[in-house]
Length: 149
Image (cartoon, rainbow, N blue to C red; front, side, top):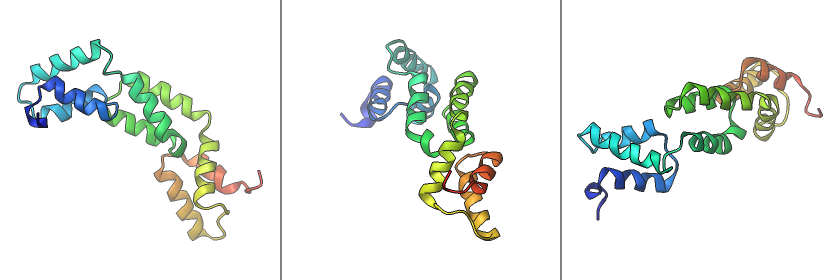
């Protein structure tokens, strides 16, 4: 049976077999092929009741996969884009804040390993860390701390 011939619930299960999706993400994907929003809602309600859709599992998965390489700001942005509720996002970001400096330091060490010697290098390294969602104060601490710490 081809993907287009599957029921809404079947398409949702096929997507969930590949990775965890938030309810909002699945709604977006399924709405493109299913003209009846009530049918999509009904299928997602059933999947959620059976435990196939779990927002906390999506959060945990993203924290595990992306957390070590990204700052709390970027993780917050990705969780919000997935439609995760604000309370879960706040808890996830708070858990990352405790290790923000260590994670930024490790990301910086892997990419550069040596402190910048001029303004151009400093700017490049700072932009690199900022693009990964690390805050300004953390970036300053990383770039001002000798590597032997």
